[in-house]
Length: 57
Image (cartoon, rainbow, N blue to C red):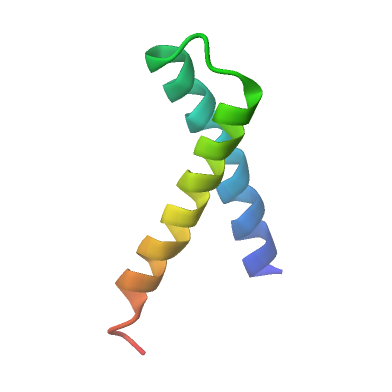
């Protein structure tokens, strides 16, 4: 359950930050751009977690 709750939290926060960033820098951006940016932020969160924990294994 921990992995699922972490995924849900990352998706929600990624969507929130993507919306805020898009409205600040590209006010005309549509929902597709915001969804793509949110997906990019979630992927980067998992990539950075992998890079941080790979030496500990």
